[in-house]
Amino acid sequence: GFNRDYLPEFEHKLHIAGPLAGRRLSNFFILLLFSVIIGTYGILSNSSATVIGAMLVAPLMTPVIATAASVVMGSKPRVLRSLALTLGGVIFVIIASILLSLFIPDKTISFTHNEEISSRTSPGLYALLTALGAGAAGAFISCRDEISDSIGGVAIAIALVPPLCVVGISLQAKMWDAASGAFLLFLTNYFATLLAGSLVMILVGLDRAAGKPDQTRIRQVGFRVFIISTILLIIPLGWTAYTGLKHLKDNSIATIEVEEWLEGTSYEVISVYVNDETVNASVEGSGDLNSLEQLEDQLTLALHHPVSVELHLILTLVENARSP
Image (cartoon, rainbow, N blue to C red; front, side):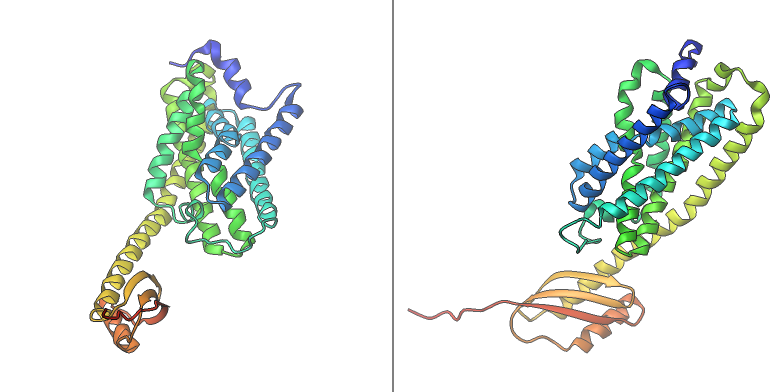
């Protein structure tokens, strides 16, 4: 169970209060600024190691765990303060990342070839399962002083700041779909952490250690919000997973059709990408090609809807071999 002797230290770690509250609050936002700087430029440079560094520096997980703990302990004022700090942190990260992404030498941000961006704009159900596990681990580690050194790994697993950095980068680039996808990932991590974290805290006996049995209404309302929000997130996450699989299937079908269309020529497929009713194909080679209308007809039949083809040719020079 939860060690009652650890309760004062546990509350002190999670909640910003007391005579040093101002200093702790300024430390929170200074660390958050550092994590946004590291995370934003790490994402823009497509550096996984740098983004991991931002996750370790970011303090945003603390008020999230504090929210779950406050619900379990039945403290409405602490729930509201933790929610306010989390909301302030979220707004701070998004605005800061928008401003930071303005000051980059290369203004052309690739949202398809940058894995640090693309991996956070289309979350699926696996993101929810991962966040549930990470939230449970974060809560358990927070409740055990002897294993608190492991909290860094949980910060990496939960990853609250990088998705928000992608939101800011996407908003600055006017990529609304990418921004909404990254914010969906943040909400997934946030509510899954609250739900799994609060359940673990109940299991380890935090509610009993707090000794406030008369405040069960706060717990009931909090759990309902966590459960309903997590269930509602399954809908867009499931749809994203479905559309992602369908997109992969369409790309595979289109690639096969382009390869068949190129049979008998010297051309080879470089890439094929299906974007709604347009198929972008890049091929490399030399010589003549079959008619583009034939390819469009093949793709229309294979994909079961009318498509137009944007063909990008990469011409190679052919040297005529001479006999000695």
